[in-house]
Length: 236
Ligand code: PXP
Image (cartoon, rainbow, N blue to C red; front, side, top):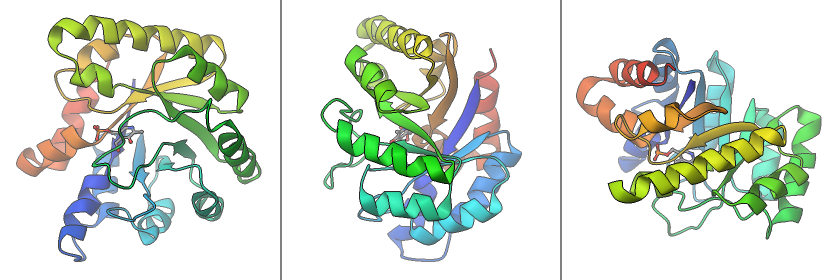
């Protein structure tokens, strides 16, 4: 299973002082050297961490794949069309949230999602959609023309131990449904060095996007080590 490392928190530390360091490009290159197969950043409307210059510089420097998480808005579509990342991941965005709090409601926002997919096609950008474990969301993602879904593992991560098997079952069913429809299956949110193991054992999921736990561990043991340790856990 591939590891995508979300480096938003590196930019959060920089923005805490509106300073020049730490440099997200440096973090991305270290993560790649340690085995990350993609680099994810969330360019938020409020620019609280990742900035426009970061996506431009990452696009020019990284050797793996750039995945930009973004809202399905004309502003973000224009940026993606210019930067041409390997993939965009459509996420819901609420200005007051600390982090993404749930999957995108693709059923409700079908026309905005379809418009975003059509705009990304000519630029050759893959589109993944971050969704909850709801069958209608998988079907709506496929109908909207997405290449992939990213299953929201947040409810699994947050569930008490007794409720984790139920959440794991929902992730499994969602992965099976998406794979049967020809979608690539990714997953992420709230995963750490302990709760990731049952997810690794599930079929169909080809990549995990992990941020907080890796960057938090990096603050104590270094980024090279924290990425390598997660890469090792993802080996099936
Ligand atoms: N996937 C998506 C769509 C996200 O929004 C985030 C958080 O930015 C992640 C994965 C990574 O979540 P975490 O930081 O909890 O590992």
